[in-house]
Length: 275
Image (cartoon, rainbow, N blue to C red):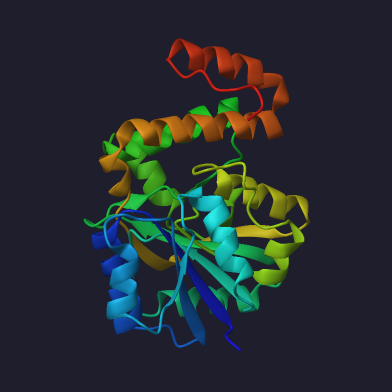
């Protein structure tokens, strides 16, 4: 039996997926593990790539684009390992990184979820954790993310300092998120109302509500080529982002839902009220 299942959801991102899998296969984690690719009906040869180049990697073809949450849950339900690693296909895993995360979780029984430091291809640190989504929390997070992206002082220095220390957070990015299976199953896995975006924040909120902690650790580093897949269909990406944000507010901050709907309508997004 595997201790770890690495779940990678992929959709039309063959070059990124190939780099990710090569990093995992060339320098595999020492922990007993399996790699599971859940393909959301890609049309760029994702599934064929996995079948032909890495026949030992488990491939699950969903038959349609189910979104991130539903596809991830399918992957989880088709495995039985102690630990589950959610990993984006646009990441590159450094030698020993996954083992470090597993070892850290082994020593912190009060922690259910752990996330590493994420950096881009030029080693610039990504702000991959934050406070619970709320009107003020969202504004603060955007300020930090954009300020860091554009290297604006003193925001860049603040983010650098923030990402150099291990600490408990409200959420970590689903681009690389390690969780114990029993903690994931205790909260019903990922909420499938989120097609993509906000599902990691919602999942971590459920874990915290269940009495467990979320930990960010800078002692492990993963390369995240953020936004590559979104470049192919930017408008659809924006639509999915806003739809998920509305669903999140309806679930966690219903008093703000109508205001957010009005704001989105003014920006040209008219979503159904039953999201």
